[in-house]
Length: 327
Image (cartoon, rainbow, N blue to C red; front, side, top):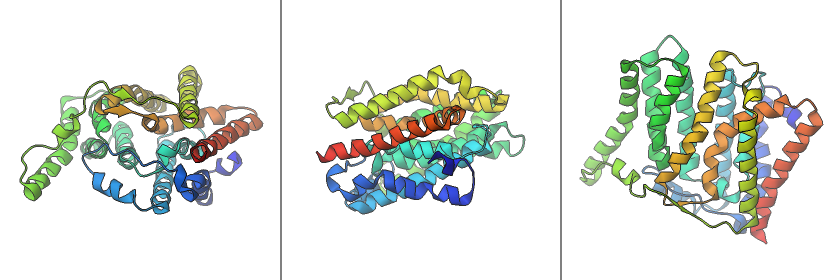
């Protein structure tokens, strides 16, 4: 199966869509296996709740969105030379990770915000370029802010963006100002629309801190939850222990960009403070960085049979967790 995604061709990229549909087939076909996506954002909440009444249509839409995101991830990591050899493994791993649990599969605030976050990362990594720096920093701030409005925990991307840029290059005061100007713009525009439409002068950003504090951890009883938690925990452990292998044979710029993905994993801890409760669904915040780490490690396995076996185990685990909600 992995052989189909070793080449960056259009046909191979399109194969990710039927691959995602097969992975999510249980949830699409059986309503009993479906779990509504969580809504934790200032923007998009009404649309997300509306999609929850679409039945299978919601899951076809979310699958198509994941396919688009997988294509964006492949393009981002290839363009930024972060995976070494050009292949489609990052997008493949992302589709796998976002299918590991039924709660990952529907439309949610996190799923929508991931799209704009990926756009923001594209601008963020372009901070190393010499031209159009003002536009790049402004747009990086803009898209990371939109991500925070769609999914409140992503508000912490403000601090992450500044730290990531400082990891990539030396920041000047004007660089920080341009980034902050871009970041504040969506909040200001959203506030003005709110005033015009509702005559409510309270800034929407205040609602993002309504549940700020130590979250309640939802008890884990279901076997599907335990499987997903175990896989993600193991992926975290392997990513940390395999750091030297992940950055091996990468140029200095690529290493810096990979380091920002590790920083993103760290920032998922303070992100949790914006949620009233933490469930297994929150683990999906790790899907983007883990897709990069897993792709590099998979490609580094010398024996193709071992890589195929690992892929097959993850594929089966994704289907099993969906089936467990039917019994």
